[in-house]
Structures are given as C-alpha cells and as structure tokens.
Image (cartoon, rainbow, N blue to C red; front, side):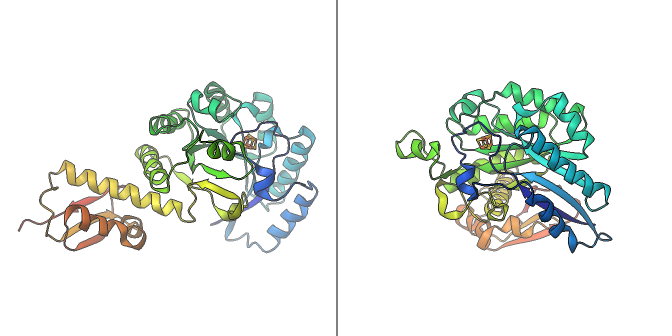
Length: 343
Ligand code: SF4
C-alpha cells in the first residue's frame, strides 16, 4: 500500500515558550490560523486518493499540539476521527513537547484514534535544554516517554544537533537516551539560525557559533550510527523545505542543505569504510590498487556519495586506483566490506 501523509500545519498557537531557535510565526509566514479551514483542507486532500492502493495518515505538526486550547484540540481530533470512521484515514500523528503530556491527555488521544506521537526532545542534556530555553528538563522527557509507551502509542523522538552548549558527547548521549526511553523512530535536525530569533541575536553578539555544514554532517552521521546499531529508523535528517516550516530567505546561519540526509548517509558509509579498512589492516595496502566495496542492496548511491565524493576520498586519502561499489544481499544497512586483492 502507498503511504499518504496529509500534513496539517498547526502554528505556534498555544505555545507560551520561546526556545531560542524557534520563531514559528516568522518562519511559517502565517500569523493567523483559521481552524475551520482544516476541514476543507482534509476534504480537498482526500478527494483524489485511491483507497484500494493507499493508506492515509493525518499529521498535525508544527506546534505543540497537546498544548493548544483544549476546545481547539478536541475539535481537530474530532475531525480526524471522523475521517478515520469514514475509512478516509487510517492513522493520526501529532507532534508536541514532553511537558504537554500527561495521563489525561493521552487518554483523550487514544479515544480519538491517534496512533503516533512525536516528541520534541531536542536534547537530553539539562545544560543544553537550559541554554536553549526549552522550558523543560530531561526528566520531563523521561516521564513523558514512559507514559506514552505505557499508553501504547508509537513514539518518535526528535533531537537537534549543534544547539547552544551542545557537544558531540551530549548528542550521542541524547540518541542513546532516545533509544532507552523506548522511541520507535527518531528525527535528527541540525540547528539552523533563523532571523529574528534569540539564537540569531546570540550569534550576532558572539555568544553562539553555529556548526559548519561539515561538522553538522559529521555529528549527525555519528548520531545516525547509534540509531542504526539499534535498528531504530531515522525518519528525517534535516529540515525540509516542503514541510512549510520555514522559507529559505529567513535563514541566517547554521546547517541547512536541501539534501542534508544524503550528505549524512554518505558520511556514515565513509566512516564504515574507514573502520573496515582500519580493523582489517588494509590502510597501507590500498595505495595504487583497485578496491571493491560491498554495500547492502540499494545503497550504492549513498555509499558513493554526492558526485561520487566517497570514491574520490578513497583515492585521495588512501591512494586507491579504481573504486567499485557492488551491492550484496544479506548485508545490514550502513555496513560496508572492503576488498583489496593482493598484488
Ligand atoms: S516549544 Fe516548539 S513551538 Fe514552542 S517555542 Fe519551542 S520550538 Fe517553538
């Protein structure tokens, strides 16, 4: 079945917080939100769907859904439930913050057919949460995840790379915590600096240095590696223009690339290739030889990298002559084997 996601953007409404990196009113370009337009949005989106071949998910995203006005929340959930009852949607997903989760809210979400909850955890380091003015602690995140799993929802943990005060160690710790708190999937977002945010002021006054693209890619690849080792799918890497969460002209710093995910996958494959070379004592044997890299089925372009960057790196850093990438069945995702025949 084809999976169709109907995104319903719920702007900043109801969120009294002011995370230093966020300015959703600006980045969405919408200061007004007409809740009654959601019904026609759903109607329009579902009109042309072939239900014999498609599964439909309604996704409320963009703000802190469970923190909005309770009447508005029930109204939106009621609409989604009607589409589920009519057979026009099969699941409902929403995003929110850890401190807007409690038993009563989760009971309401269950009653209305919500299946997936995405939690903006961002970091599990209290030092980073404080510096980012998130307004909740890592303990709030632990409590929320536990409750969500007890209520049997699918749970997605969203985390950020390169927040104020954050180091690679904090980010690896956050990924491990996301796994140990029972998240079924994760999203990784490198920090992007938007204009008219506190983070922008911090950057301009020298109190915050955004990550370079190269560092953001490297750190995200390390974090992706943690999730991959535990078979936790990462369903998004980097902001996506199509999500309507920002416009490119509002970005003033940080790591935004329209193909950020591809850069990270490629970095991870290069790391795996390097690890294989080191652990099999091949470092000094590659120079001047043809090298074959085995990768899992369907992963050739990720392993080659954009514009074959990884093949070039192998030539440059190890002196490889020709580099061939061959797909093999039965290999785990994000693994690589390097074959370098003896002379
Ligand atoms: S909680 Fe979410 S919506 Fe509210 S300020 Fe922070 S990032 Fe923005």
